[in-house]
Image 1 (spheres, rainbow, N blue to C red):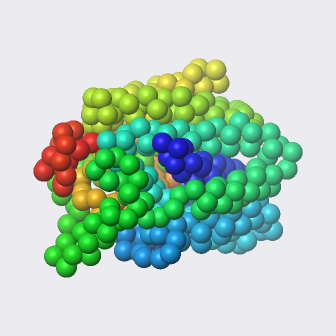
Image 2 (image 1 turned 90 degrees about the vertical axis):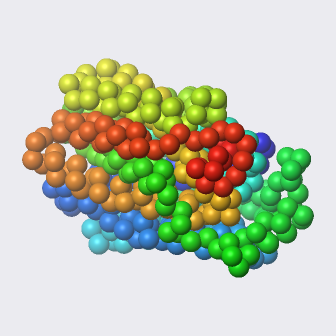
Length: 416
C-alpha cells in the first residue's frame, strides 16, 4: 500500500490543478464574455482534444516499452508541461492568450492523465484495487480541499499564486513518482512484487498474436450501460462544478471567494468518505454502492433548486459529497473489471473518453439552459442527469465478485 499512497500524489496534483481551473477560470472568462453558455463552451473547448488524446494515449501506453516502463514516459512529458501552462493561465494578457494557455494546459494534462490512472491497477493485485482506488481518490479529494480552502485566500492576495503553487506541487509529485515507482511492476501469485517472472508472463500474454487489445472488443453490453451512466452523472457533476462559482455569485449573492470556498464542503465530504466508499464497494458490490450515490445526488441536486441560504446550501453540499464518493470511487474499477488485464490502459482511455465527452457537453448545455430559464435550472438539469444515470444502471449487470478473470460475463474478480 505504500506505493499506492505515493501514487496518490499524482492524483493529488491533478485534483489541485483541475479544482483551481474549474473554480477560477470561469471568473477570468467572465471578464471577456457575458454570455453564460459561451463561458460554459470555453470551459470545455480543450476537452475536444482530451476526448481523443486520452483513449489513444491510454491504448498506446498498453503497448509502450521503454527503460522507464509503460506509463512513466507519459508522466515525465506531460506533468512539466501541465505545470508550466497552469502557472501561465492567470498571467494572461487578453482573451487570446487566456484561451491559448487553457488549451495547452489541458493538452498537457491529457498526455499523462490516463497513464497515471492506469498505474493503480498495474501495481495493485485485483483483491486490493477497491482499497487502492479509495486511497488515491482520498488523495485527490485532499487536493481539491487544499485548492478551494487555501487557493481561495491565495487568489485574494494575487490570482496567480494558487496556480503557481499547483505547478510546483505537480513537479514535486513527478519527482517522487519517478523515484519510487519502478516499472514494470506486476504481482506474482503470492501477492508480492515480482518484476521478473510476472513481467515475462504478462508480456507474453500481451504480445501473443491471437490476443491483441482492440477497442471495439472492449464494448460489451454491460460496459456500454456503465459508460452511459458515467456520461450522465458526469454531465450533472461537471456542469455544477464548472458553473457553481457563477451560480453562487450571480444568484446566491456570494463573493468570488465565498463561492469557491463553498465547494470545499463538497470536497471535504468526498475526502472523508473516499476510503469507506471503497470498502463498501468491495463488501456489497460496486453497482449497489454507485446506485445509492446516484439516487442520493438526484435528491440533493433537486433540493438545491429551492435553497438560497448559504448555510443550508453548504450543508447539502456536504451530503452530496458523501454520495459522490460512492459513485466516483467505484466507477473506474468497475469499468476496468469488465475487460482483460492487458487492456487496462485501453479501458482507462475509454473511461476518460466518455467523461471528456460529458465535460464537453455539460457546461455549454447547462449554460444555455441557465440563459433561458435562470440559474435555478442548473440544479434541475443536474438532478435530471442523475436520474438518467440511474436508468442506465438498471441495464448493467452487477460485477461478479468471485475469483476469476476475463470479461464481466465470465465472472471476473472485484477490481477495486
